Length: 262
Image (tube, rainbow, N blue to C red; front, side, top):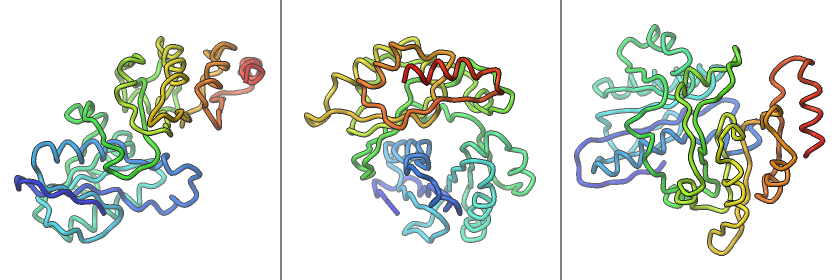
């Protein structure tokens, strides 16, 4: 639980559900509620009293507004559990639900919780809010060098959540880097026309006189990966590199070629 008390305007409770399978996840950053963190600093900047919690707990404040994030659809029961708990505990509070599950299946949440406000997709109000990772006492920073994806895979929800494709330059990204360990949350890192400049920049950049170590949560697109990219990824100290083999065996040749570069 993390709370910040500023000049009282509104009491805001930000909730990350306690996901039942969270302990099975290899990398802690994969469960990092980036959107919720942006809301945290957004409300602090407004002078609200903000409390960030995980699971179903009673905070130090009586909230006027409760914002609950959501992850994947197979953890929907944990989201519903949080909605039910906070709806009963604070019946007069405004409850909003966002995140991946809320974006992919908003109607399911609305059908079961008519009084809840569901916000699908990226929240433009907080998209460009800066996160102070040191304030949150995190040792891993999440970054986006791009949003959306150039592919149209039928099974993927990215185009529903992030329909607009945007790119950042190294100059923009450099200003955001705060920690030495970074995980990129890009859906397709290599589609960014600036990705080579970004990798070269990371290679030469230092935080507290120490190098930066990187990882990509999503696999790299084998149709885009070149030998030069592989060299740059190594220089930028990317670890646990994965290839996104999203389709059938017809992709075997391009996947094999990408693996040979790595």
